[in-house]
Amino acid sequence: MQEGFIVLGEFTGSFYTLQNFTIDVSLPFPTDDAHKVKVYKGKLENARFHKEFKLDDFRRLNSFYFEEVPQVEIVPAAVGAPFPGTRVYNFKKLLLIDPRVVKTYDVNGKTYGVITSLAYGLTEKSPLIGKLDGFGGDNPGIPNPQKGPRPIPIPDSKGDNPDAPDSTKPPVIGQGVIGTVKDITDQGKAIAKGCWSRLWDLILILIAIFLFLTLLRSCNHGTDYCELQVQKERELQIEQSLLDTVRADYENNLDRALMGVSTIYFYRNSIEFHASSNSPNGPLYKLANIVKLYDDKQFLIEGFHSGKDIDTITGLDLDRANKMRDFFKINGTDEARFSVFGKGDSVLLDPSRRLDIYMVDLNSRKEYNRNMRVEVKPVKPLEP
Image (cartoon, rainbow, N blue to C red; front, side, top):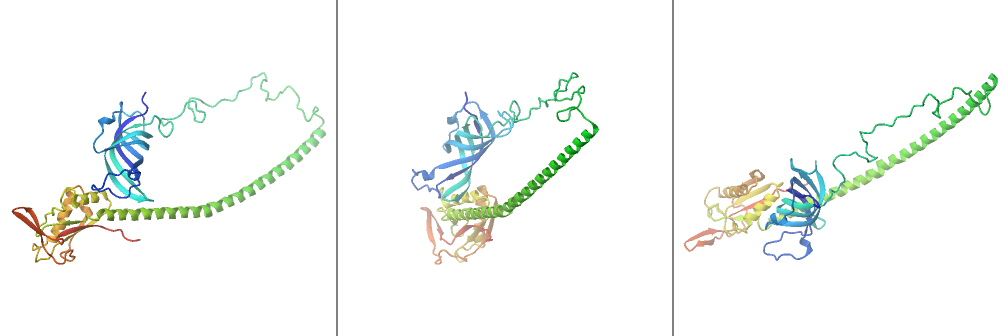
């Protein structure tokens, strides 16, 4: 018998790890627990259900296998779902196929983030919350439309109802039979006097209860509008402090990621990327991936030349900035996120302007220096 559902769908989830920096390809493969990744919740959309669990059919070189992944909401595809609506399951086994990290941020020494992927996995047998498909049945706490109210029995004509008065017997007052008119009047006055006394006692009890409830309500209001208000303000301050910390960490992470890759070099009198920047593992492609990852940020692209006596083509600084923006666009980033500027030779990384030689082959060479470049910078948020 199948232990749970076998599901294939589009996964978006949250994860954390103790790792606080990106592992460079030159570093050795980590062996400690600091680089382990924990997926702690997610959502599986457009889910399609399979009959047999065949994990090896979906393994790829760039897939990641997890066990005991909690709190995954399953949203079935339009047809063929074994249950209506959505359900939340723990997954016993989950394979993420070609995952992509969308965002990361640091909180209290841990790196948190969002990951998207095609996912294939096996759920536990039961969902996290109980029965989801309607209500009713024999549960005494749930109304059943098949059962109506129980009617009150109607007494028969023979007087079998013990609560019905018997018209064949004379009325009794106290322990004897009915007496004279004077006796009845005196007894009625006594009864009336006793009723008025009990009524005043009841009124005094109600007044006392009302005063007690008024005092209790006043005390409760004092707690609601004073202590609870102070507690709420304290919670808001803590949340704002955490938000400010996350925002600062987000900006600092971007600055660290851009270090060493935000400056791209060119050849003399050219908008061709220098080979040191354009290599397969060079800064050009790393920079493109960082810009695409931080999709909520705007960037400045500043182009430079080494002076009109060396870079003799007019407008070369702005042409280099536009070349950089076109490269980002080709690699899938919206060009509206960039502002380009030509800065001339206003900032020289090499004030000597000395030209170096790059040998393309035995018969060809190109000249360059560090002033022939573009710099990519994030637009910083305004200080509050």
